[in-house]
Length: 207
Image 1 (tube, rainbow, N blue to C red):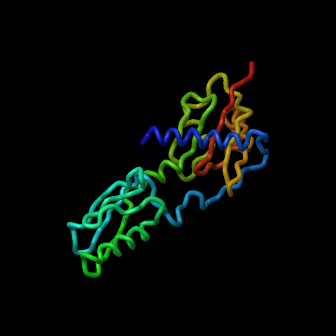
Image 2: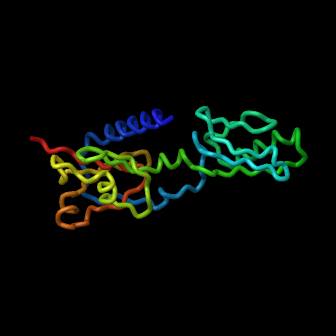
Image 3: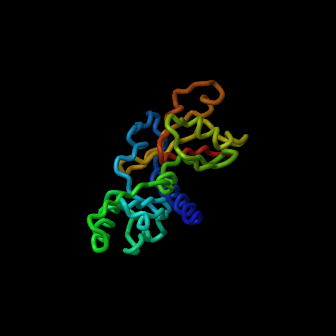
């Protein structure tokens, strides 16, 4: 599973960079989407952990992970498709199938561990940093926070050419980050807030 996650992350990063390769970083500040950190209608993903509860029927209640095929197994009715659906949709399908065995079943599906979402809600820092990282997004996180989480820059970093890559409405854009001014002069004008999915690249100097 971890191998698949790493493969997905590498592929996504390459596609993002390819989309931005023909343009230089914008000097404008990136638009910050406050809703990007909120999940209005969560769709269950692979490796999420679900608690299926059937009122007054503890033998039918179960805690299960979502398998790589998107399925979960529920007592009496067997496999149910959960991946890509909301908890309410899964609960409704389980209720419909249980009605053949239980009179008026009351079903609740609760997400106890949002593992797939945690992976998607990350900020990645790569290039001339001491430890390229993929870190969970935290509210209030900035470019500097992410770079420091990567151990800071190496002695070969071209910090003045740092770029922030962000995808919005299906379009990838790059933004110039004056990391040298941020770290040496305390000039925070380009210390932008980051959001889930951002990629920060610190290039290496050309010798």
